[in-house]
Image 1 (cartoon, rainbow, N blue to C red):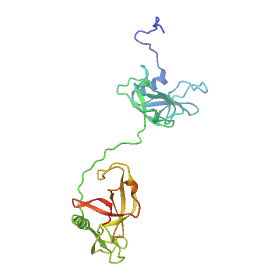
Image 2: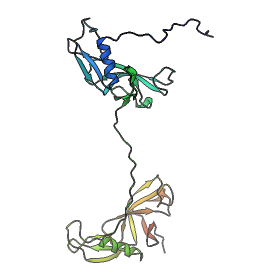
Image 3: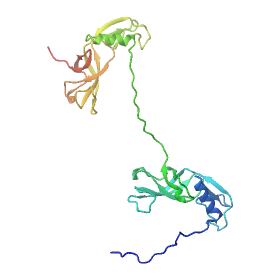
Image 4: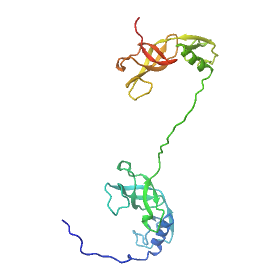
Length: 283
């Protein structure tokens, strides 16, 4: 078992050193909520700034350049179990971040939320502390750029049927499908409508179609629907007898696996509406 340390090195009141004009400017800018680098003679921007060019050893020019604040993750490693002195108390990543406008990368923490969310090339922005003091920790961490949002959408509305739909719905209360025949192309449309969608002619002739029809195509649905009797259920396009276009409706009273195209079905009315269609039974 490791023994408790019996030696302590401590500077009472803390160790104080001068920052110099380069690092001092960098820390002062951090306190103001900005990130700066320094430009070398070769026109490279170093972040964090250095007093000497690491490639040539020459002093860097006294030219500070504001960079970022956004940047791109170049390399990263995931910390699944943060330690006491780590900047975050939840899993995070240490990352090399190339800030926009910089030619070198800054090491800092990225609060990515999850290992799955982290990747090379991830765009990140700094999360600043409110009580900044002039330290690299004035940036609490970096966080991913906002690329998606979740919006709760709910609206309440009332539908007022037009003249054609009102006539159709009124006929349903009498267990009747009301259709209209185009005077030009003679196509029969259900629900009833006032004009032909093909030729634009005004429709005045009304006629009853159905209530039986033929399944032209269908889909088996495995997600719950409050109108369906069970899951899975079938929604089908049904061509009513006497009509030229099908309507879509629920198909029930038969196992979903037994539904086939071309089968004959009949409307089941309830409460002045079509509850669903069911297989047509022989008399």
